[in-house]
Length: 52
Image (cartoon, rainbow, N blue to C red; front, top):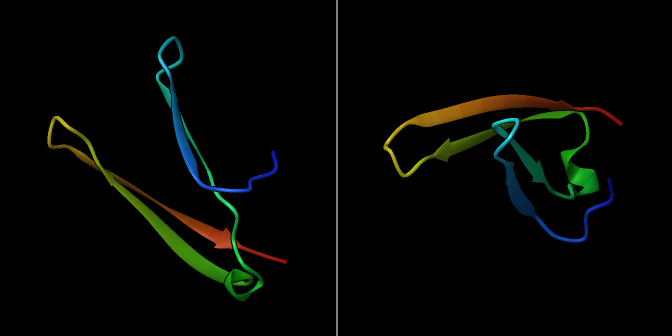
């Protein structure tokens, strides 16, 4: 999937969120953390390793 801007979508039947974003070349070979806080007060985070 190609991204021109960031977007977050939720698929109710699967309960799955999809976050699409475009990283810069500066982000190559680094780790990023995506943290989200939901309306119910819960938090979720995941780590990504970006490789060239």
